[in-house]
Length: 119
Length: 106
Image 1 (cartoon, rainbow over the protein chains, first blue to last red):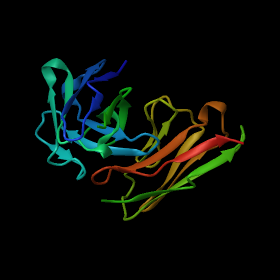
Image 2 (image 1 turned 90 degrees about the horizontal axis):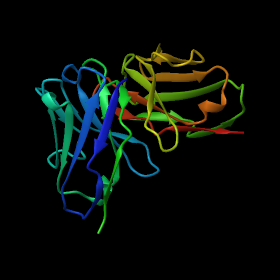
Image 3 (image 1 turned 60 degrees about the vertical axis):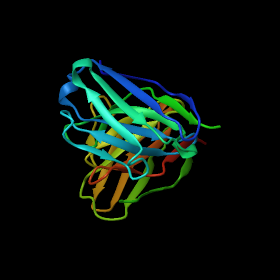
Image 4 (image 1 turned 180 degrees about the vertical axis):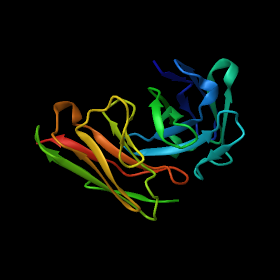
């Protein structure tokens, strides 16, 4: 069974930093592209970032470019999102999401971790 | 970015009803259109990919159609477990989602 378990969320002040982690199990993590997708409270879904299986392709939404960094450690079956210069509008549940092949079709999702940016 | 517009934003229906949700892209996306179901407090679940392909394990009462800019998701006979919010998403370019359609009990 595919499992994606996020951690690292919490309360952070505007301008602060936070690092999210996602541990994968139940599939060959090193062969899949991965993503972060977020959802502000009561709002819709927003794709945040993509990383290919070997980390040679990385993309970001314009809203986070230059502030967030996605990375992965295939030896640890782990995906990360380093978030800095956080803003109120970054408050959301952040989901770790697996892509089908190289496409951004999101076939498996973690349970999410809540990031709250507030003073 | 490609904008995705869903309609309606919400609807009320009864068990057994046929329900159709539409999604329009701001430019052509071929068949690079996916549908997700999200229940309160839960992560989204992939239902349909490539406009009309049913994800493994998803009941056959769900179906998708369309190409280019206009797409639809149909639930042939609404079941109690189908009351949820549905999102379309394009995977043609940088992924974007529609605003969601909440399906409520009449």
